[in-house]
Length: 187
Image 1: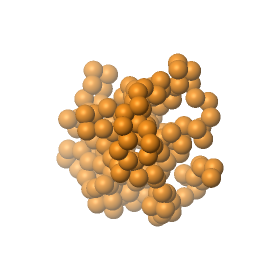
Image 2 (image 1 turned 135 degrees about the horizontal axis):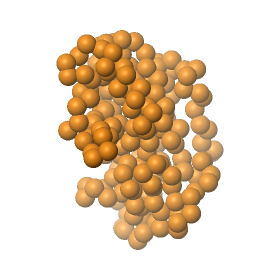
Image 3 (image 1 turned 135 degrees about the vertical axis):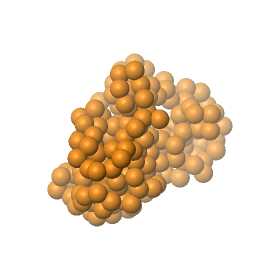
Image 4 (image 1 turned 90 degrees about the vertical axis):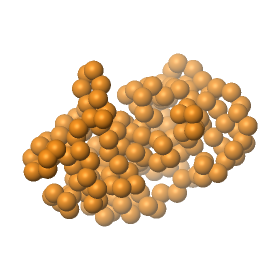
């Protein structure tokens, strides 16, 4: 069954985005416990590009498929897992990148939804918190996607978030989404 990318984020309401995200059925990777089979010879670069044996994977559908069998291990490592094999995959920063933002509402009633580089849709909230990490080059924002997997929020999207937060009256500045507050202050 081919994996179709969702429609344009700008054309959807946040209710429609939440419905699409809820209907998406992912493989139960957390239930699969095969033996370790080695290295996949794959890497996810900081910019979200997936590589196999040093070459970028050019087919977006293939990347989307691999992203559905990605799992974070208790030791912090990443694996691609199926019912019969488990292979290591190198991840430079976060396995996903949040590349687009849709915001609706204001203040405590605001809801934020993100499109990932894999076309997955994630609405920020209690189950998908935003966090901001301090780094030498400035704050680095992350969105929890699932099972310990995060998306690095792309710099242009971070600027949109910062603009929204600074326009509000929260002290410290931060963002509301789905009833949860996320301070912009890096941890």
